[in-house]
Image (tube, rainbow, N blue to C red; front, side):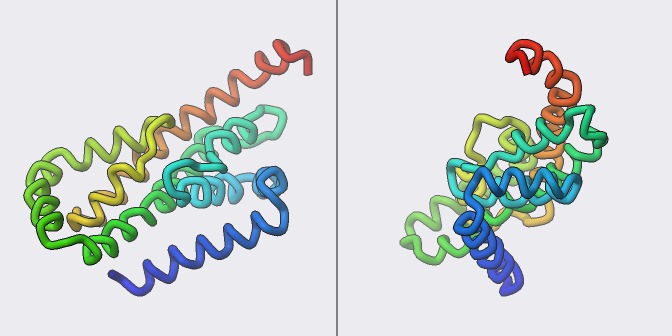
Length: 186
């Protein structure tokens, strides 16, 4: 496994843990929203790097930041958050890659038998999981790392899928937040 990648994953986890310890989840949302476009990117990066259940989904930050009264471009917000989310999700690839060596040989052989099928459909599979907000992407990322699926293809598919989803959330916030406010009498 690449030492730089391992260092980056550890740094993300340490920084995220330190920020949560100091400001808590609500404070982190407020802080990232105050950063504007950079906050959208960081919310994607931090929000998707947690395992299985994100306690900090970037969809929320992007939706709120897209409020027209805040003056941000929804396409740019969604795109920046998508790039951050695609990179953050990629951390799970390295968990799978490192975990491969902890698996017994018979399981590694079984994973390797799946690789030709995954090579054929992997890009679309990653894209679809990344573009839907209800699926834990970790379910596919860890096995992809364990079978050493091509990193560049995985990263491009992830960034593309996350960007599509988060641009959709940004536009939903841009055009829908005023309706929600009316319903809630804000």
